[in-house]
Structures are given as structure tokens and as C-alpha cells.
Length: 275
Image 1 (cartoon, rainbow, N blue to C red):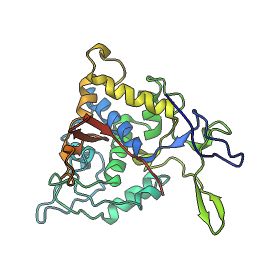
Image 2: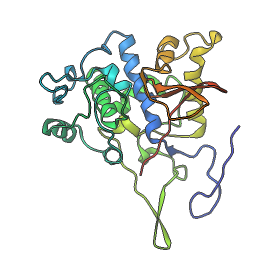
Image 3: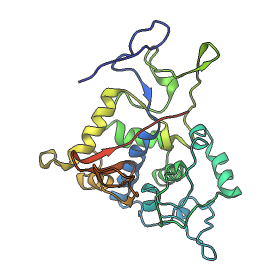
């Protein structure tokens, strides 16, 4: 089922079902899947410190014996970095050189790696650098070749300039009495935190492929094994749930939020939004 609501553009018509939207942090599940794609082929270890691939990062905690977060901890939002919204949301087009300079200048750790959940875009930007280092090409190209093309996600990509004319959903901000169109950022070092542009149709296909890992009839369809897709959708780092009678367990998997709901059972999701 699909439907369109609201207005899009000056014509005031509802957005088309194949309109391209920037889905921001929904991108993180693509980043996690790309890391597992490399892991499953023996090209990296989830338990290796990220400094094996991005040596510019200098850990600071625990005090006296600082520890670099592993790829597994970054995937599960337990890397020790503080929440960095909305700073990171505005860094997508940052160059790799500029990003490495940020790391060399020193980044703050909030906790020792592995001790608690805290949502971090920086951690997923580092995972993007790992994918580039191991995969040997820019992050957008690697994800496109290994995930998007094999799965037939032909309406999904990273470059807003490549979207067919009339298909791009543009965001607006109200300034005074007028609505002002906001510019898009281009691909860069932070594309791995939120750079995907896609349609409702393609995003549903991606979610369906992830869900199919729990179906015995699905086999091993696609570039990432069913076992690895299930791994993405298991709690890897627990989150202390808010007081809610209907939520039994909550945590972060790999690029996905995982909840065990008293009424609905397992619920796997991820939101996405840029300023």
C-alpha cells in the first residue's frame, strides 16, 4: 500500500510515490550492512579497534589507559562518543582530509568504549572511513556496487544532482511569511551517517529484505547472509527503557533500533531527519 499526503513544490500537488526523499539516519542500516559484507568475506574483524583503519583517532578513556572502540562497538552505538546532533548532520560534504584533521585535533569521549549506549553520528562516519579503507573506493560507490545494484534499489543513491528532474523532495523553512527552499549537501566523509536519497518503494524493499532474514523460505537471497541480517536486528547494546508498560526490552543492533513490544513482539526500526 502507498499513499501521498500534503503538498510538494509550487504546484501544490501531493508528492509522487516515487519521489526521492533524503532519509538521513536510515542510511545507518546500509552502512552496517556494508561492514558485515566485508566481515563475511574475511576482509575485516568487528573486534578490531577502529584505529587499525583510521589511525588519526586518539582515544582518551578510560583515563590512564585509553582504549579505541572496536568496529562492533561503533556499530552498536557503544563507542564512547557523546551524542553529536545537530553538528554531525551538517558535515556530510566534509572531505576525508578535513575529517582526518578533525580527528587529529582531538575528539571528546563521553565514556569508556563499551560501557553504555549513546547515539553517535561520529561513530558511523568512522565506519564509513573503514569501508573506504578496506573496500578501496569511496563509500557511496562501494554501497552502490555491493548493496544497491544487487538488490535492484534503482531509485536509491547519494547524489542529489543525479536525481531526475521533478523527482526530488525539497525541504523548506519558514522565514517570516515565506517558505525558503533549503540547499542539499553533497556526498562526502559523513555520507555514511545519513546521505541516502530514496523512494518509499525502495525503502520498503530494503526493509523487506532485512525482514526476510527471519523467514525460512527466503534462503540466502542478496549480498549479505540471512544470519548477518539477523545479527543486525538483535540487541547488541541495551538501552534503559523509559517507563512504558508495553516495552519489554530495547536496544541498538547494527544500524537499527530493536524493541521487544508486549503487544507487537519484535519491532525493528530507524528514524531519519536532517535539520
